[in-house]
Amino acid sequence: MRLIDQFHKEGVIDAYTFVFDEMDRGGNTTMLALSEDGYTFSNWTSGLYDPGGENEHLGKRVLLSAIGAAALNGLYARLSIPKGQEDFYATLDAIADEYEPGEASLLDRLDELRRQLNDGQEGSE
Image (cartoon, rainbow, N blue to C red; front, side, top):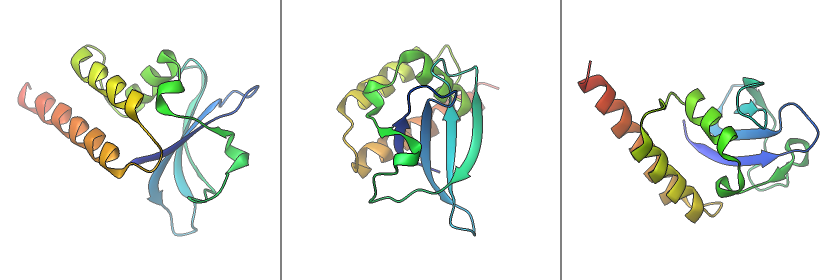
């Protein structure tokens, strides 16, 4: 499952919506809704997403680099990236700063970092 888009909406508890490339049989796309602080509200859900559309119902499209640190920490936690892995956080933040929508190579890099992190955890057990 890959992160493909992210949105922000003011004045609602689920301020951030992260959209992933997984789709159910009904055509709904997997999403993670998070509060501004990343923890007050955090819910996996599915909904309508048009890859080429504005998706105004999800809010305003934002770059990862525009998302606050607290919300990103909540995202990392939900993706099972543990705290204490500062080197991976720093790398992810650097990648987020370079992110432009539609850059598949960046998403591939994020997936590779997640795999490396998971491999490192399995080896330490």
